[in-house]
Image (cartoon, rainbow, N blue to C red; front, side):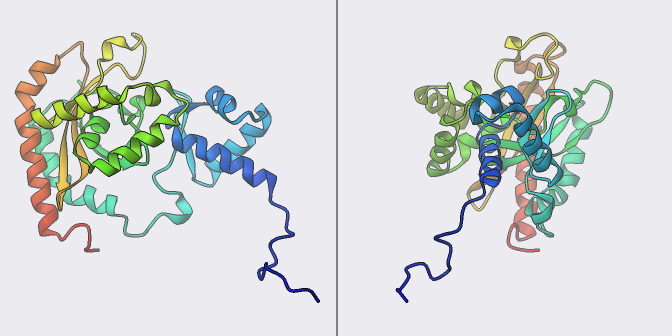
Length: 274
């Protein structure tokens, strides 16, 4: 008997082509949040019927989700099968909720809490009252990193190494909104945000009149142990309020609430406890 360098016996086992195709689709969605079926087909080069079967399987197993309005796909924060019982995001949302509720009483527009999820932001929940509020289900729960106020805010305050990792991943995205921004512009954006202490969303006037993304937003960071862990944002309809007015009226309240959340997180021993 000849000696073998394959003690597990895997050397002669064939790989699973169907699994490879599924992983290729999942990777494409991870690299390009908010991706359409047409973009996925162009990126993966898979037949239409095959791609649909893979997407249906990934959706049923809890790995991805599809926005019914925009018809775009995105990965879930964590698959249902591996969702941790004591998710730090749940603790963050619970600890910060009283402060966000109090903030909402001062602001008639929605107040959102978001964290980073790979190369986009993930909105954990929304505090809103009154009738002058955008339909946030239509606006997407995964704001893009370079276009949204929350993504820009996170990029500005995260460590340099983490920012570079995010930008390298975005550079591989087939979505031009993620990969088409020059590095020098990003550096200027980061410096401006850190100098003024807040981030604004990309100009919504460039969006079509019927686009669900025709809204404005203002975000500030929430930091814990000298690291940004989330962003707190106020969202409004630009035809009813302008950015200068919203900054003047609500920035101090947002910043005060962010600091109050940070204090409660320290008091709760976040994120180690639980």
